[in-house]
Length: 433
Image 1 (cartoon, rainbow, N blue to C red):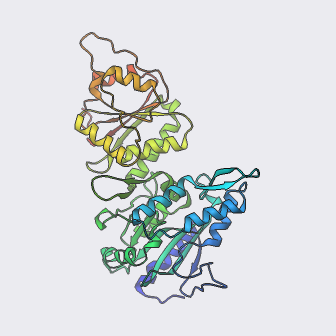
Image 2: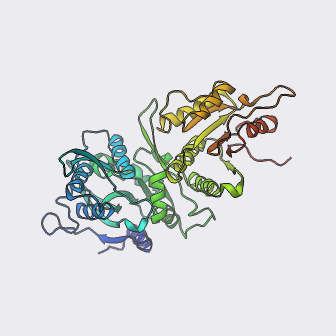
Image 3: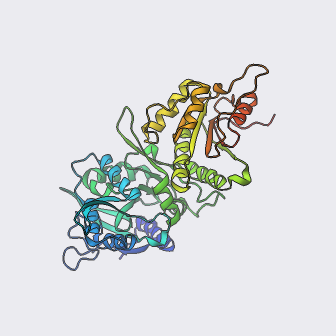
């Protein structure tokens, strides 16, 4: 099966680790195609394991008929080579997260739209996890062999490129991954994230990440647990079934802006920090609305953490929550708003509170996100700040870049929103005076 080369000495422990996480494994170096195929692939151009996908969709959608299942499979496997690769990836990602919409007819002959669930995010064991090693893929001209491909419900969501331990990790990106994205692009239409590793050094990124934006994953969990080597840490930290489903559902964004669209994967500190904040939110009664402080170093994606946090609450907790994002500078307010807008977290044109009265009006209406400046909570000497809303489903996110949120303004904010919950995102070291 294996030549005991330097690279296989990295690959074999990785395979064993995936097995320990509950993945089935097969070495596909000698895979058969067509009739009596090993994995159900007609040719190496196919990257979806259709028999596994079909079984999974039937299991996840017992109420749907075979026609609906077949239509969903057709939509998932259709050729997207005419699309920009990031557009193809985003299109499929939306189906992974929200299901596939199919048009069919009911018993009366009326056209109906059904949603076919592709992944069970709440019950990891209800999904099929499979790891292929030495997986052949053919493009239009060239044929390539991927080191490891992780499948869920027959879809290739994890791509791992390994190098020998004495090789520079950057070679995996420059010499291999860049070539794969050009020669076998169809494998990346489905990809959630890509891992590069030489065993001792490992990084994770997305299909749009330049090498410098592939990041380490230093901790497996919030207790600071680390693996024996970096490959152990990154696989256990991102590919454990529960963690993988959480990352896939809640920690991926697509950002549109002035340049090309980019796909963003949470960094390790964002994933752990946001989940710590979510845990606090789950104990909101005991915390009396105090969700704590989320500390960021400068330039480490504070607004993305805010988006991950707010969107996960909207997905995972029942209720009609409004997030009020409070900053202390107009340019910072604009910047964070644009990040929310470009990531698709805001779909409304105007959710900026221009005055105290406007903020009160917005809080009476149905808005997922409202943006305002801390100075809206200013009072003259002797003035008592009025109640703006007694709703208990308001979550205030304060960006404490310059610490003006303290003292009078912070006290007024709590008087104005007595039943709200508060979380602070800060890039300023917390200094005890």
